[in-house]
Amino acid sequence: MDRDILQSYLHRQIPLSTAMKVEVISATMDNVVLSAPLEPNINHKSTVFGGSASALAILAAWSLLHLRLETEGHASEIVIQSNRMDYDQPITGLFTATSSLPDGADWAGFVKMLQRKGMARIEIGSILTYDEKIAGRLSGRFVAFLNQK
Amino acid sequence: MDRDILQSYLHRQIPLSTAMKVEVISATMDNVVLSAPLEPNINHKSTVFGGSASALAILAAWSLLHLRLETEGHASEIVIQSNRMDYDQPITGLFTATSSLPDGADWAGFVKMLQRKGMARIEIGSILTYDEKIAGRLSGRFVAFLNQK
Image (cartoon, rainbow over all chains, first blue to last red; front, side, top):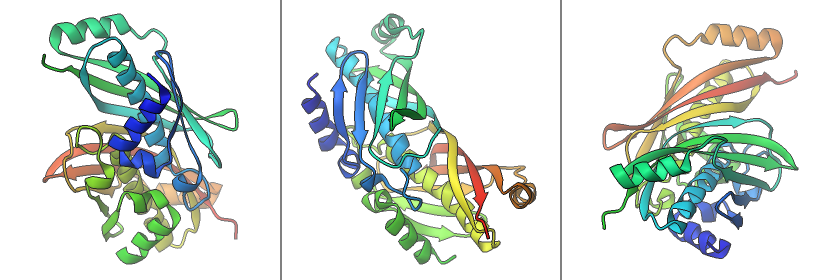
């Protein structure tokens, strides 16, 4: 998927991503990298608001799952079920979220379950980076529902 | 704290809360209740984006801790350390986040530690409600740092 297509999809469908000035840096089957500047995401301490940090990490994780399912032709709806977020460092400038499948993730098993049962769950991770250091970590649990044909 | 003061503080200091059209419904020592409408927080499925749901829950939790510390005269900086968020139901309209101290929370112990060590940690919970049903639950871990006098 072209990164411009993903970016315009996010901005069109999720207005908060426009308010946050989210940009798609890259989008492959391995990772989706999103960035956001400080200004629209700032808090009273002149650092990034935790809600913005979480939102960027969730968007990156969701985008990777969406892209993988779409690329492989499994038209699905994706819902976030839960997430854990750790805020490791204050962020005081442009930051990125890089999503990936966790080590040991069973993508083939997930797809098989999705095809067989019409729904399946998977964990996706996102790492927030600021100033070349890890600033936060999200682990998100998503449910995919295969669209009826 | 007057709810108008809290609302203007949030909107002034955290521009994302303005973009989300967050309103303060009530703010007491027991609970802070915030609301947000669907439109600025919508996603591609016409439900509330998980990032918006998380952000409202975090804002409610942070606001309660801020209000309690300020009311008791413990001028502090508050940082979110981690959170767990469960998305129980899709939200398709105006929703609220109600924060509270979890059952068994040791507020007195937290304040004692803050005074003695200059920092202390506490968990705050937020419940998201939509259409009179629980739609999500956040448990957030915050660190407070006593300001130098």
